[in-house]
Amino acid sequence: MKKALIIVSFLSVGIANAQDLQPTSTEACLTVNVADDKKKPQAGETVTFENTANKKQYSGKTREDGKFKILVPKGATYKLKYRAFSTNVDYSTLTLPVSKDTLVSFDVNIILSLPKSYTLDNVFFDTGKASLRPESSKELNELAEYMLLKKSLVIEIAGHTDNVGVKEANQKLSEDRANMVRDYLLKRGVAADHVVAKGYGDTQPVADNNTDKGKQKNRRTEVRIIKG
Image (cartoon, rainbow, N blue to C red; front, side):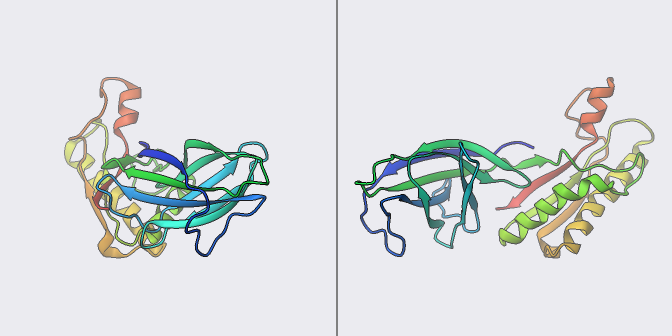
């Protein structure tokens, strides 16, 4: 899966306008702002701060204005994790001061630009069939969960094959596999009009079909963003 492009900036802003959450002598107040590359606020985005020493995590989800506030203990370094389609991706770190005499607030500004397509690396089918293998469940469950959070998201499930066999059979297999993934997502509660399934057969290779490794790369399932 391709990673999202994220630009992160940290701005120390003292204690002004902390509103419902106030920094304390032991905790800093973080105001997280998530927007796309056109400055549109992004609702329903999960951002986690993981303490690099003890691995304890502090998470929040953005509101309609693309923001949330959270208190995290001072005197630690945190790894920022953004919830992408089916994984948490590490992007940056933030070190908070130890001093108990200073009340600390930070703006954490995240500019998010998602690629237009993702390869579902851990979605597998039985050889020559459209039946999903059990190990596909984890990634598809996470994709469904993400889509339920991102109510405006509309995607295409794109099925692809290598060039082995009859072209017409490959086309049908790719369509059946794409529809199988779509059906799985619908059973997990994703709205039917938010998932389109389409098969491309062997017409869009990403690697050389003359090698086993290339064929393996070409046998793939992609998620393509229609509407973010």
